[in-house]
Image (cartoon, rainbow, N blue to C red; front, top):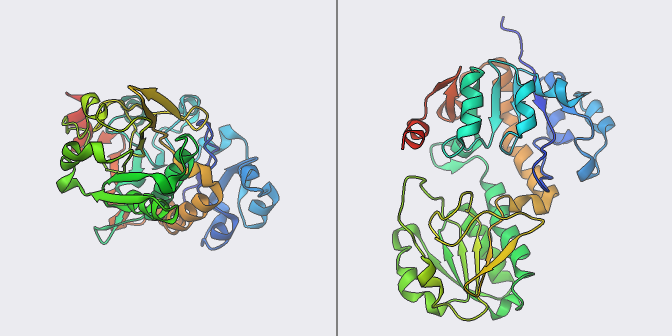
Length: 323
């Protein structure tokens, strides 16, 4: 019988990243909570003590001990200081974003690691496992960005790019706050360019193909927006993707102004509502922990395995790095 692998849960060092991958409640529901090693202080931002995790069956450990487990569950991309402690041949389970992340890919390949990417986990081929977190990201972005617009949201005439989970969350909050929201799905996204002068807020919630070099909106297009307009780019994880003028911002410094248009482009907005997001992430991820630890075959996990034992399986990574 194959020995159960251990799982480490480190605290993310990303700026203002307060989401956590597991709650004590979901830990208790696992078949083998004793395989989990959680960094001391893990739940402090949620008001959850180390004792609560211990009572649920986990081991509280140092950062180095947690990062040296067989499986490391880290929702956001690896921090630079993590690499030195990762065990060769270990599994990384989280939002990997290896396609556009050369540094993380090199670490995984050089250490012959396996990466199971949350962004590629779909049940029955359609429903994204982490759909609720994506909704929260859209909701949180609109709520946070509204504080910097200088106008009450019920005065907004907003265009929303996309109609997936993130867009659904954004639309829900826009409508609850009284804004007028018009949806531009991906198949009609370029129509926005011809109608941009109608909107003082544009919310980008498109899942963008990193190989698509087209621009939905250019710097010239934004000059036709009303004075004091705002771009809320929820999907911005690199500079100038489908909106030419956006680049990622942070929760601490979320906005900048270009050509009179306020730009908001925080790339982990769900962290603003850490309790809601943590519950959503933990509920989605926890059913897979026992499977990973036991080395069980699972269609969802297999399809989301983008690197195995240091070998790149996802052709998108090879293509992006060879551009």
